[in-house]
Amino acid sequence: EAKRLEAEEAEAKRLEAEAAELEEKRREEAAATKIQAVHRGGAARRTASKAGEQARAKAEEEERAQAAEEAAARARADEEEAARAKAAEEEAAARAKAEEEAAVAKAQEEEAACAKADEAAARAKAEEEEAARVKAHEEEAARAKAEE
Image (cartoon, helix red, strand yellow):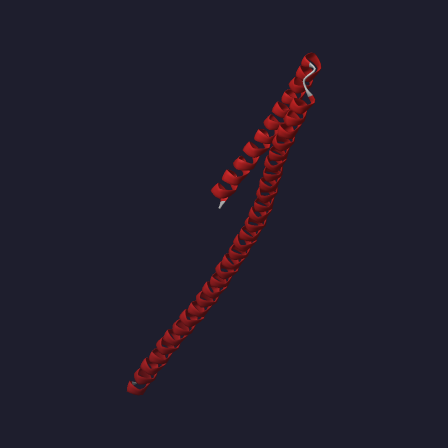
């Protein structure tokens, strides 16, 4: 898409340059035609013929200039569309990053909750083992007392 836009933009610039070159050429030709007409004092028929040719040439140049302007307008529209697409892409990337960060935070919270649960289980097991040791000690003491 970007390459296509660059190609259309380059084409629009080339057409604009061509239109400017053609306009300059037309001006030069018009000036040369006027000088020739003054120096030669050409016949009215020739002058009319040249005027017709110039009118046709001018019409063709105007068509080229209009085509260049249309191409430039299309290129600008494409650039605007590309800018909108880029903004949407950046927004989507920002949303994805925020979602990823939220997922990481949630995973960390879950990991912390698991660690707390593991600690609580370990404490409970240690208390059970301590209670079993105390009970075993009490039973041993009771047996020893009974034997006495």
